[in-house]
Image 1 (cartoon, rainbow, N blue to C red):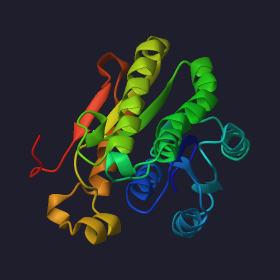
Image 2 (cartoon, rainbow, N blue to C red):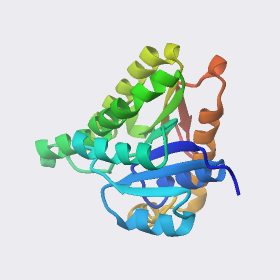
Image 3 (cartoon, one colour):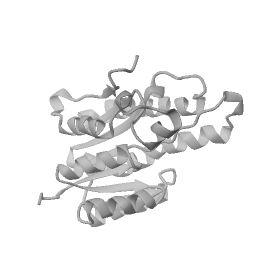
Image 4 (cartoon, rainbow, N blue to C red):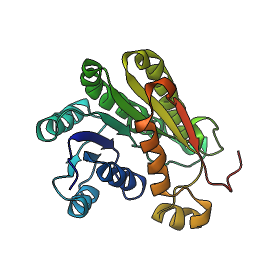
Length: 236
């Protein structure tokens, strides 16, 4: 059995990419905490990964008090976090005039403000140790806003700007901060059922997780600040 002495947090765990990220990190010797608004996914994953390797925590990333409680639990039960992945978002599609101000606010809170809460909580310990990795999941909408995606795109644009600023501020202090732009559909139930996607046309969660782990392993002399991933059939 591997010595599970490294700690990672995946904020925004669901079946698909979040699950694959947890699996890859555990395979590499990390003890992983998965933060999710609901308990369904976490309960299933802890049965699959085991309590020694995976800690499921219910957490509302838009609430700083909830985030503080969750990460304090991680520190008490697992130790200091060395890898933090912000993978929280939800998709909203609709005409602009039919998209409410509440929709804009909700997407921004989950996508961008949620990242602020989590990163502000883990960053001080990383700075004290002068090392750490923070990865943020972006999307096509982070750089190319499509029709019908006004709320989603504005939130993802904001998240990309936040990540760029943090990378410039904290890279000189030993913290690797990178934005991963996922340009395409991620293979899973939603892509299959909602968009009638085929597996060969999608990003595979396990392949994405491989790229995330490559970023974690990078030497500070050649850090990536932004990485874009897409299937070979995707136009760009």
